[in-house]
Image (cartoon, rainbow, N blue to C red; front, side, top):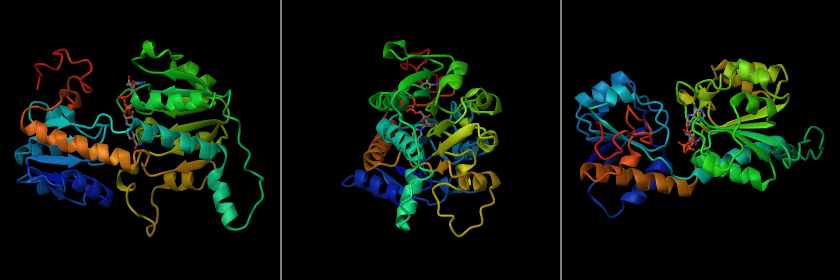
Length: 345
Ligand code: NAI
């Protein structure tokens, strides 16, 4: 099987090559470039492609992939919001890695929360210049504070466990609440009004786009901290910026950003930053931005490579795990009316 691998970084190449070591049934060509309308011609002669979170698989790209004979899109991530599934339907299968390490993302979300709350990013810089003053570094105890968690799936659950370990009062919202988990589910308004911290762990869908917006921010407690390790478009970033400027939002921790596609995962340190909103956010003392690194642990990378290679192999020998397939009609296959036996594809 010949696989075209887009947006390849050295850590991807290392983990995939380690996983392929000793086998010769899969041949991967690594392309540094992202997949989009301009680069899709590179897929000619490949049966499968492997993409990541910021490759753009719109209808035009999907049509071209189909024309080029690509049969399989493997996502080396969980989110599939950049894939036009309706354009794929009946033509190209889409397999993903539904879970590779929910711990990696949940632990990173808590790392951001702790760093921001206790101003560790500030004290790190200060002590390097022999500034041992404590002014401006005051945080709050997490014990007894209320955290609102939106999305109680694999990552949300791990994050809630961590929060409970700190003695926090956890309230949650999920469109499909899992009552068996015994969580304190509330409606979104109640979550917005009562949370000292809000952490996002739901997927990006039409419904969740800008779930954090001007109106929801207006309902929040003064000084609320917002943590987003999910997808940038869950937050209307301009509204967030205004919330910070109005002193309504106390702090924001963003591992993902609405306009991250052309910025994140690359070194832009020698470029003038054209993105005004990001520039302004980065100038704020109470904002931490990381570049979509929550997933980045060696354990997660090994699991991603292992599941992706297995998805490719089993797809072509007809034994693949339908749980890993995303389909236009039932995106996470959870509500598949055909019970995954006789897929509608
Ligand atoms: P999951 O599918 O296990 O859980 C998602 C939860 O969100 C489910 O409980 C679902 O019912 C809920 N949900 C769906 N629609 C909703 C809505 N409209 N409102 C509220 N809740 C809704 O997914 P998992 O593995 O927990 O991942 C969550 C998200 O984290 C992914 O969709 C992805 O965007 C993001 N992610 C970010 C990474 C990073 O490196 N920053 C790495 C991996 C995932």
